[in-house]
Length: 312
Image 1 (cartoon, one colour):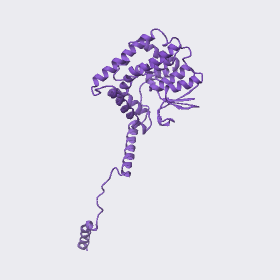
Image 2 (spheres, helix red, strand yellow; image 1 turned 180 degrees about the vertical axis):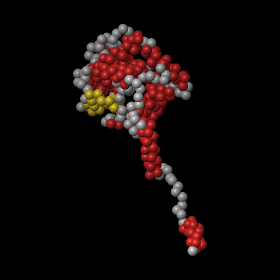
Image 3 (tube, one colour; image 1 turned 90 degrees about the vertical axis):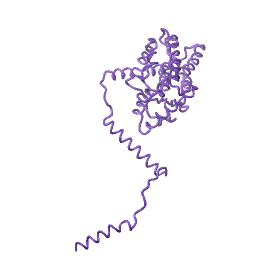
Image 4 (cartoon, helix red, strand yellow; image 1 turned 60 degrees about the vertical axis):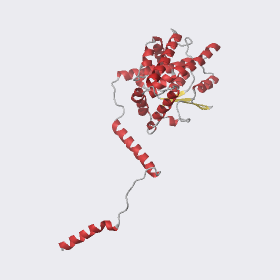
């Protein structure tokens, strides 16, 4: 069994920079399933054309619930100790997070201009291979903009949209903090499916330094939620915690030599390829003018003969 996920970011101490990838990784770690986790920044190498993807004997799955169901059939689950009532609570909380926290997350990551261009787009552009980096982040950006716009009667009122999304998300985070209390996990001393889902939301909102840190600050103001994220990473993703420490301790440096030159060359190659295709497809026509006629050269030839005669 293999799980191919979006790569993480060392300076944030995150195993993955993607919500679904984090959820699947956390569930696999919590359940103890013998799954090989492969990190990638190229969804086009996935058999489904997107990440994350779980490959097993039954095929390839990109849905969290499908992965959990398959592993449960293989006797790998983190919900064996839950009562029927607690199992129903898992479903209810998943729906609550989808309605209250998910819109705020995608807004802050993919719609809010400062965070999108300065943090999220920059990370995807630097991580993804050429030429996929040229359109994949923009495709995500447009899709999430459409999603947020569909939720409001007046999507052009950015202040109203942002305020409402933050309000709902903050209420949800406060409720999660009250629900967790002093417990190690949401249903006691062992993590469950609910923890895999909640941890992924909180980790992305807490660890990534966005330009609008409203929800990050709210989580920091809930010490039990901050502690919950840190302990989960240290226990189940210890290598990421060490990578984060090493990155903070080391001075910043440019990991890519001649980065400016490479970006310039990549841009020129992309432009040349697109321009060549446009010409070949007849989308662009280049006017080379009329071919020269014999008359166009007569005056030059006569002048040359006059010069010859004068010199002899």
